[in-house]
Image 1 (spheres, rainbow, N blue to C red):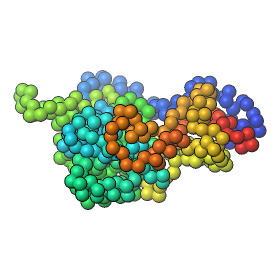
Image 2: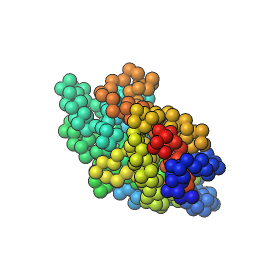
Image 3: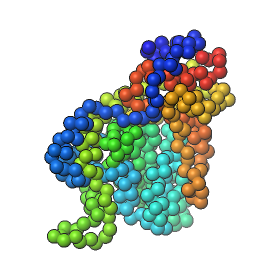
Image 4: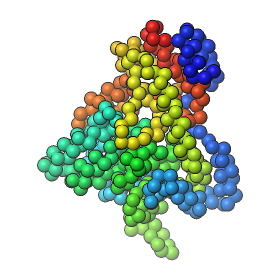
Length: 399
């Protein structure tokens, strides 16, 4: 049954649509290409399993080719990439780091563990990403009191780039470096370039739920070869070139293994196809929900192309007749995973003492936002079941 026929059946009161789902439907499961096993076999037969050798280097080159970043370091996770970026920029105890409040905790966790103080800023309703106007006003006030942040983190959300040029403009005025957390925006574009290009550092993620996965892993990217060289030094325990183990500082064991790099290398060749599939999934949701009262999809600003890593819908409980959690629970009862939008960090107990500016926009998105199944291998029939469950949560006359 096609998605269109399934929705038509649900409108007519048909109950057979939900029965079409014989298994649990996950939010964003890995989508294998079929080439991973051969890549792993070749890697294991070569004897290279450590975080060194030709496979991690080939993966870095493939990331560079796919994104346009001239310098790439493959590491164990997106969080490790952010940690290295903060270390290279000299972040430490007593420094402030500013970030949008609507993001995953990994954006800020390494900085807090390094002794820095986070400051959370609200997002715009047009993009759900960091508000450049608010950022500019806060930077001016910080300069006046003599306490500028050491780093500002811009964040791409659910496959969508922030307005990076506007963020860079206000940060450059005060000489504050920008790190782009692009863990969710691999394959997204901003003003004709890959999301995150233009920041001092950009972090990517290849976690199991991402649009391209290595079963884990991440990457740190930059336009500056010296910055990546410094990060690479720190990622390999900061060993100095000597016949013995010589260390002028301490580093980390953050190099990506050849085994995971082999999986990522097989995956990344399919990036554009994965983006196209996820954008098609988003459009089917948007079309199916267009006539429902109180439902809207995550907007796409005119400055770029979202990868639509996750399709996110907002539910106005008064107009729709049910709140976000009612929809989530109905989906769960049908064997369908969904997830609320990130809980803003200024509302998290871990950051109860951190200063925040605004936050009402992010809080409203959290209260109403729900991430729907978006895996690029999801069939139209599977998506039709999701659509049917959502429609059945609405008032009877809108089914």
